[in-house]
Length: 254
Ligand SMILES: NC(=O)c1ccc[n+]([C@@H]2O[C@H](COP(=O)([O-])OP(=O)(O)OC[C@H]3O[C@@H](n4cnc5c(N)ncnc54)[C@H](O)[C@@H]3O)[C@@H](O)[C@H]2O)c1
Image 1 (cartoon, rainbow, N blue to C red):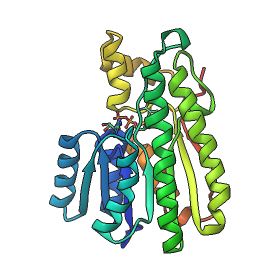
Image 2 (tube, rainbow, N blue to C red):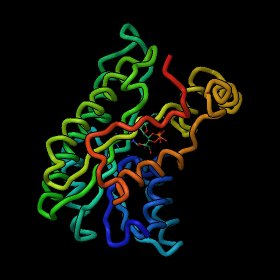
Image 3 (cartoon, rainbow, N blue to C red):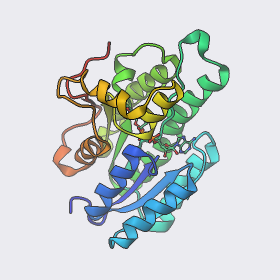
Image 4 (cartoon, helix red, strand yellow):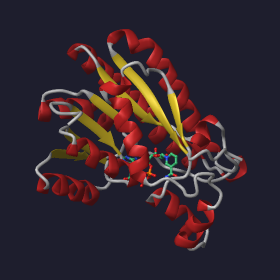
């Protein structure tokens, strides 16, 4: 019960990695606030947690909306009395090189993957300072720290999340607030699978092929990323701050 008595806010909590994180934190005693665009997804995961005796609530909305981002921290504190851990996990992946990237794709990546993290971290750190500390875990990407091909807007936004994490980690370690990020390579989630479908590929076959490109033998399951997030948010990681942790099964970005 690493998170007994703690409140965690998880963005993208109805998605692949987010849902795995909601389950782990709730199983280990946290009160979980789920934030996601999908009302159906929020309802489902919160019902599941409550059915297992856990505590969860949700506020659905669009992270591209500043007011929604800024309200999430207040809403969490009103619902559960504190904000101890913030997981900035939600993300979108516009695909394309610069000539294929529309303004809409560019701003979707920047607004949802980066600016929402800024708004939420600013509100979250203000609250955590009042409480005497906390932890933030951001989701960057292996493709953020080593940009992969043909994903200009995505890689740029995730690279900026890595830089923001290092900045916040350094600026707020002295406030007893640890800020770190996970940088996964490919993870078996709807984000990855819908990309294959859009390109006309069979997602299961494409994943089988992708498994062969990873030195550890397979791409990550969402739980394997969520476990690292939980570790980074836990007291066991008390000396890790301002770090970007690569979770890649040893697969480099080509
Ligand atoms: N899946 C991968 O291969 C992979 C690799 C590296 C990093 N990541 C990162 O991990 C994080 C989680 O991704 P995932 O694979 O679980 O994807 P996912 O698509 O399964 O989940 C993302 C969630 O974010 C939510 N979301 C998207 N836009 C939103 C918005 N505007 N407002 C509120 N919620 C919104 C979606 O509804 C969804 O539930 C993302 O930041 C992603 O970039 C994923």
